[in-house]
Image (cartoon, rainbow, N blue to C red; front, side, top):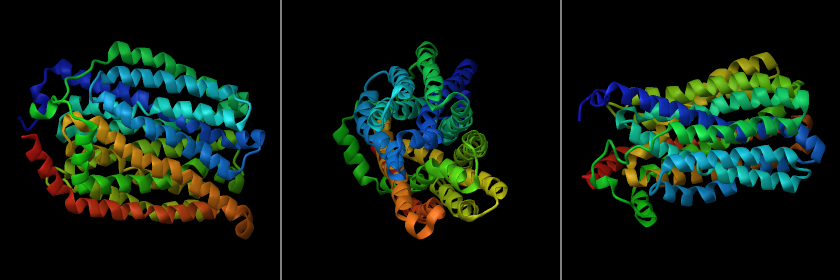
Length: 431
């Protein structure tokens, strides 16, 4: 294979694969707009429906994560055997429709059911998309490509927070659900019309292109120690990102006097732009440094987590709102470095017929611990800390979660120790 994979493709194909990447990134942006819109709306929803912080944590975290992770594995199994483009389009249409329906609920139970529908749809988004991207881009460029795609998370945060806050304050939180949900249903048709299903295993050996069972995939992953440490590293890093991130709007509203529109605009810009920069940089840097040593794909997340600890601590404990937002920008860049390199390594650890399933298992662990438990932990701690800490209860719940999440850094370091051997094992198996 040429040292420059782009030279193996005609110019239209090189342009088209980047076009597909942009389309899939827009889909992922819709994914997180529809997922995170609830976060910026939770204060007015809490006031109207009379909810506790623990109920908010279940609503924004566990209820969504439960159906998301359970449905993700069978959908990924289907994606490893059928047209992945169609699965992504159908999933986008479903989660967008359920987001719009969230604006019609009249009580907490109905909103939980609507969020379960959103989670079911979003379960079919990323694993098939990861597999498609890995068949459009060669291994040396996957970190960059998958980080570009993963930046859709923070573009979704940007539009969901900024747009959702303004719409909620101007027209009400129910209208916000309608406005962000309906365009995704329409964009599903764009995916069907413009994205072509790539040949599976395009950059890999013919042997690796055969159908693979769930049992075989699990058998392979059980032998790959680095996979499980990567998954736990991602899970604990996202434990902080989802736990504190889902309550950061409430923290600024309660402790620093922001309005819903103000906090949406401020966090949309700070978290959205910084997160997108950090997510792309993570894969880009790892691809460059990883030429000489693949362990850089895990060392980059370690560096990001460690360097982010100082500014993130001030953001939670400081009193100057302007300085909090200023320090939150570099903290979010650093905290976002982990995802692209981690997904790229998971895709490289398995053969093409296992990629969607491997991503689904990664996301099962990441979302069950990170999204499922993170917001619930912050909500429960916040309620428990109301007595000893008063109005600072949420602040101390979030700093506790930040300290617990640093265990993810240790997981990445341990995973790096077995990564080289696991990659060699995969290479031998594919030959």
